[in-house]
Image (tube, rainbow, N blue to C red; front, side, top):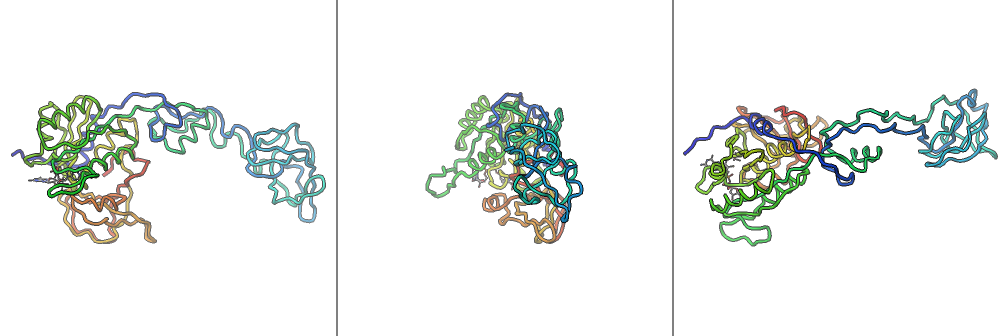
Length: 417
Ligand SMILES: Nc1nc2c(c(=O)[nH]1)N[C@H]1C(S)=C(S)[C@@H](COP(=O)(O)OP(=O)(O)OC[C@H]3O[C@@H](n4cnc5c(N)ncnc54)[C@H](O)[C@@H]3O)O[C@H]1N2
Ligand code: MOO
């Protein structure tokens, strides 16, 4: 039997990323762009705000007219009209005059300060103030948020709700984004039942298929479902071949280890795919096997649920995001302290499903429960992965560790572990 040589996690990530080819761009409507990646920078097409405007409901005045105002010397202004948001003043403001002005309305010509309603006392023809106002006081200036021509967001950035607000501000009804890869999902294993099936002896329900599809959805990657297949070499080979014709990448779960029915390595060989690695010095997920056939990726994730989950987040996710042009495809990382002892040795780098929590001592992380690679309960509880490097042992509560965040829409530019 072939003895597999484990490679460090960082090397495995780099092997994959070196093979990634960014997909082309396409134009889509703004409202459908959430989760996609900008193929063009967002450049300010005009100033924001586009005109000087009032940040408060109040009165637009000439600041110089308030000079000398005090509690004992209230100065009076005459109101010459009202400007609601969306309207403009009909004529310039002159000496001792004011417009009633609403939040968001354009400052009328002549005015250079806004007095909030709360700072005035109404009179028959207007209001009085009891303090002087400075030129520019309470004014939102044209261009203070963005100046025309500024590059506000670079190409390669994930579009989220805030990005959509910015694009809408500048009138981008359509936006140029990178194409998405189509990813096939195939669960292998004769023991697998559908989620709707009753349990029968020796069988289990397929949890990896639904989980991986959810991980893809969370990463903004569309998938094509190839269902489950029995551990039958010919049938499985045919399915993998078909899936590769129809997709940019195929994620399989199970069948990558050294068991009698672990057929994926044989299938890769039959197809003439180049295996980038078939053993990673990590736990869970050491059997994760990744191959390429032309520009297409074959992610052979482990059948063990925690290993499958971790293999997706560490290897498939960054590759797929990078295909979509995302400049920050890695899981974001933070430092935290361990909330409890972790005494197991770590011959391979260990990714412990964990829960992070902010405490009075800072960010803490605690293992999320049953910690084997076949665990499913701790994947459900965890919101991060604690990283314990290979060759370490005996972590104590309070020790500083690296954390990888799961489920964050923002990513990291570099793989730093
Ligand atoms: N002699 C050795 N045996 C094993 C080794 C090894 O190095 N030498 N590695 C072990 C490690 S580590 C892992 S991890 C597993 C990985 O095995 P596979 O990735 O080939 O996966 P399977 O054997 O097909 O299944 C493993 C386990 O997961 C369950 N499973 C499979 N698919 C699903 C699914 N879709 N949903 C839920 N659960 C699934 C399956 O029933 C098995 O219990 O190999 C070790 N063995
Ligand atoms: O490949 Mo595994 O390391 O037990 O998950």
